[in-house]
Structures are given as structure tokens and as C-alpha cells.
Image (cartoon, rainbow, N blue to C red; front, side):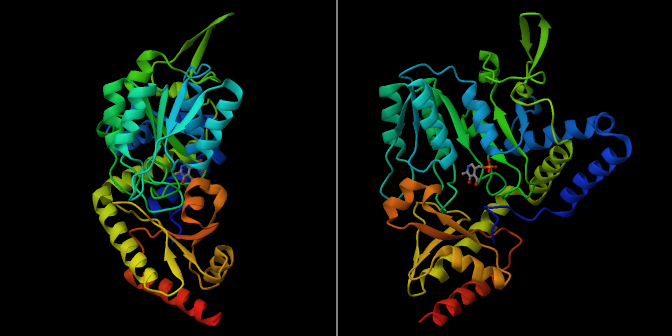
Amino acid sequence: MNNAGSALMPEPVVRAIQDHITLESRMGGYEAAEARRDAVQDAYQSVAELLGTRPENIAFTENATVSNMQALSSIPFERDDVILTTRNDYASNQIQFLSLQARMGVQVLRAPDQIEGGVDVQAMADLIRRHHPKLVCVTHVPTNSGLIQDVGAVGSVCRDQGVLYLVDACQSIGQMPIDVNELNCDFLSASSRKYLRGPRGAGFLYVSDHVLERGLEPLFIDMKGADWIAEDQYRVVRDAKRFENWEFAWALVLGTGEAARYATAVGVAKIRDRVRALAGRLREALGAIDKVRVLDHGSELCGLVSVWIDGWDPGELKAALRDRRINTSAQIRVYAVIDYDEKGVTASLRMSPHYYNTEEEIDQAVSAIRELLLERV
Ligand SMILES: Cc1ncc(COP(=O)(O)O)c(C=O)c1O
């Protein structure tokens, strides 16, 4: 139940990775990449289909953070430009915005939340109209709670106002349907290893036609993204590969493509419903235990369940559950400073079931927590 950390890879994903590594060991890495060129192209196609776009709009990266960095570095920020984000954006995104603020003098604004949790879209729309930000960035599902932010509604405003829009879909990809056209985003970043059930060390970035046509390119573009055509001149490639690096773990790309295919075959809407049902069962049962406080806020909640348990350090609880072969995650304040401070806690225990978890496993986890609490009375 740590799928928001890293889920279990299904057999076809493992096979795709292992087969490619074996091929590399037998014929050499460059030769293996050439031999599997069509399969690699299929991986772009599968990820594109998952997002409702074309392979030309997909760049493979090492992880969601690198995807975000590549997108951010392509935007020609100037002093006093505004980056508008939310109070629930991922820690690394927030750190990068603050780094840009320190180095370049951009302003970082955060739209307020609505009372039930998650960004207040109306307030965000007002801020967009007032400040005309250079970039709006919204994390769809934060790392530390079951909140789902309304990335579609924010996207409509960005489209109408002609503002660049980056969605962090690291926790939502593979967990719920995502169509980049419905989100009206210019960039969407994701990792393979979480709800998508792909490998660690792999991720991808969606880049819109609008961005490609505007000629945006990452600051540290390399010979994958551009051709060095004369001593003082390079030419950027036309598609989203301009956001990639030349050297890449093709085995992980093939594994990511397989994971995208697998999720599509299972049916992402079905996955969403099942994950929500399991998480709902877990939240309700945990909420009924004395001393347990469920921390998830939002009008709509997803698979991440976070709780504070009085008298327990989440790290200790995670270890005790691990001894019982139950995987969870101990989350700490620095992962989401604003959210934890508002909730008045310094840490939480995060449990994130996937569709392959069973109702019995949910009930066992709840019983285990109840027993551990009793031990301490
Ligand atoms: C919401 C969110 N965004 C981004 C990331 C970063 O992903 P990665 O570790 O693949 O860079 C995470 C990781 O947990 C996350 O939860």
C-alpha cells in the first residue's frame, strides 16, 4: 500500500526491461537500441495514447522532477515575471520556483485554497487576469494527501488568457484518466513508477504544439534536442524530443511504454473507481479509530490516504507495519510545509492502495494499526 511511492510492476513491464538489458548484454547498448527502434517508437505511441496526444508531443525523462525542470528551463523568465502556483504544489516544484526567485527575481504567487481544500479556481482566475503570469503550475494530486486539484478548470482560464500552464501529474497518472486536451495544458510531467506501475528512474513530459511552435527549448539542450549545424549555430529538433537528453536508459523507456499499454488495457476509469473505493474504505475505517485523525481534505478524494495518529511517530508506525509486511510511507513536514502547518501536524502516515490490493488487505492494515495502538495504551 505504498503505490504513491512506487507500485508493483506487472509482468509485461518487467519482461520488457529484462529483455532489453539482456539484448544490450549480448549485442551492445547502441546496437540493441537500433535493433529495438520500432519498439521504442511504440513506447512513445503508448504514452501518447494514455494522455490523448501524439508521440511527437512526448519526451522521455528520468523522472517527474526532471520533466518539470526541463519545462521550467524553457521559459524565458525575466525579473518580476510571475509564477502562479498553489498551496499544494510539490516540494521540489516549490523549491525550484524559490530558486528562480532568488536567482532571477521572478515573483512566486500562490492562489488561496477553497474552504474544503484544494486551489480556489475563481481566486486563481482573478490572479491570472490581474498578474498575467509567465507560468501557472498546478500539482494535480499532491504527494501527501488524497486531494485532487481541479486542473481542468485552471487550464480553461490559462487557455483563455494565453498563459503557459504546467501540470504535475506525478501522482495522478495511471490512477485516473488524463487527457491533455481537456486539461488545456502546455506541459504535463509524470513519473513511471507510481500508479502507472512502470519502472523507477523513468518519467516523461508532455509538450504542447503551442510550446513547440513557439520555439521554446530547454536551457541546457543537448545533441538529442538540437543539431550542431555550424560552428556558431545549432538547430532545434521539431518535436518534444528537444526536451530529452541524448543518453538514455532505453530499457526503462520500453518498460514505461509497456506500463502505459497495460494501464490502458486495464482501463484507467476502472482503475480510478477501484482505487477510490479501496481508499474510501480505508479512510472510513481509520477515521473510526480513536486517536486517528484523517488529514485528507477536498471535495473529491483519490487513492492517497493520510492520517495522524496521536502518540505515534509515523516513521515508527511505518516500521511496525513493515514488520507485518504492510508497506506504507512516513511523510514529514518538509514534503509539504504549507499543508502540514495548516493541519497542525509535523508528519503523517500515508497509505495508497492500488487496484490490485484487496478489501481483505485494507481490513488487515486497519486491524494491524488498531492492534499497534492497543499495545501502547
Ligand atoms: C506530486 C508529485 N510531484 C512530483 C514528484 C516527483 O517525482 P520524481 O521523484 O519522479 O521526480 C512526486 C514524487 O513523489 C510527487 O508526489
